[in-house]
Length: 126
Image 1 (cartoon, rainbow, N blue to C red):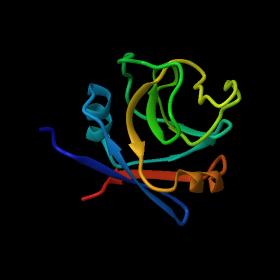
Image 2: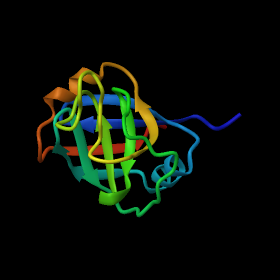
Image 3: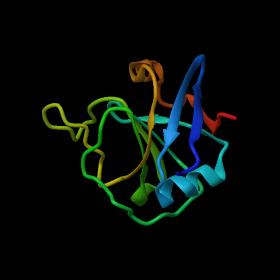
C-alpha cells in the first residue's frame, strides 16, 4: 500500500486539505512542497506556475470538480472547482490536457472566494 500524502491549501483565511494520488506527477509536486505563488482565476479554476517541467502522464481533456492537476504547456498547478470558459454543459474542461495528481477534500465551493492575484500556499499537512 502507498504512503498517504495529504496537503494543506491556504488562501487568505481559507484552509482546505487535499490528497495526492500515486502518479509520478504527484510525486514530483510533493517533492517541491511548500509552494507559495499568486494564483490566477480562469472561470472556476485557479492556476499558478510551479518550478517543474513535466511531461503528460495519463492526461485528461476534462476533469472533475475538486481535481488538482498539472498543466504541462504552462508548467502550472491547477485547482478546478467548477466550469471554465472552455466548458460545455456541466463538464469541467481545462485549456488543454492536464495530469490529474490529486483532489481537494471538503467544501470546494469556498474557492469561489479566491480572486486573481491572491497568494496561494500549498504545503504538506504533517
